[in-house]
Amino acid sequence: MRSPSGLHSHRPQPSTAAARFSLALLSCVGLRRKAKAGHPVEQSTPGGAPDSIGSPERWASHRAAVYERGDTMICEALARGEPVTVVMFEQADLPELHALFGSAAARAVASAFGARLRQLAGSGGAAVRSEGNTWTVVLPGHGAERALAAVRRVLGPGLATEVEVEGEEIVLVPRMAMHTVGAQAWPMLHIYREMRGKIDRAHALELRRQEYLRRERESHSRPAPLVRATAPAPAMPRRARAASPSPAASAIPAA
Image (cartoon, rainbow, N blue to C red):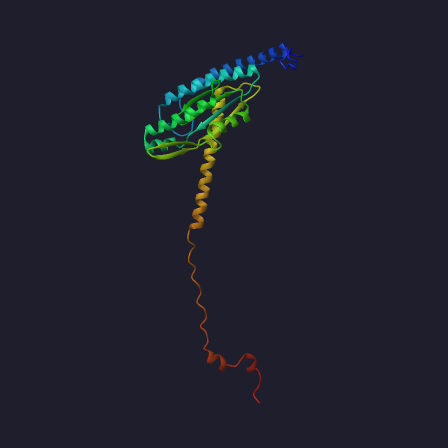
């Protein structure tokens, strides 16, 4: 079919669009049932570093908002035939920053990082601080590659956030996990737990790697044990060596 401008129109047939919408609707009905049953389970921070700012009840309510908004965005995107990518960021160094420079500095860093994530989400997505050190971003219409490109464009290739605190430049690099929803709806609660688990497992692996390297350095820097050398045999004086006959000469009978 040609449009008035002479270009081919690729608009899907009504039957195809209706079937796609019906499939998405059925998937989302099941999604909402699973989510409704799963939301009351979340009462406290599920993992990661301890909260440095705010109470556990505050973050539990933030996560409930993430689950509800995420489920809605996933259903709407599936109805349009678009993917959705959810990205989790954890600023694990935030508690140390809070301990060294105080709550005002930690809030300033968190605010600066949150502003960049809201820029990443844009008007069509959502960026929520879901734990004391963790943010969750929902990107409707983004597959995995497009979402990663957007993250690098906004946060930079190294994902670093630089903030000046009390005359010192503080650089924080977050841990990150991603999950892309394609043709089938996943409850946001399940997605959140999966990403939380990925970050926690990566952190545990990094701790084991650092411990291994520390032990390797200690084993190479440890001084070797002293070994007592055996005393060499006393040397014979040169004159005595010349006077003493060799074994071959002593075997010859005297004339």
